[in-house]
Image (tube, rainbow, N blue to C red; front, top):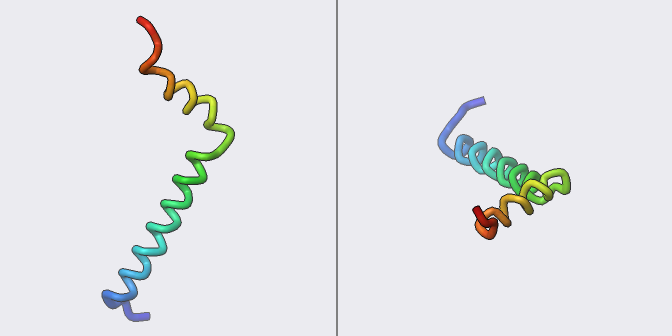
Length: 47
């Protein structure tokens, strides 16, 4: 298999898409919802 610029571009696109889907899945997972809700309310807490 010869690695030319188009193969590298395709590989970079696939890796980027997989990374994006992974981040979106992590951000919307129910397991992290409580942590994100707590972080979202930090600016409103009184010292």
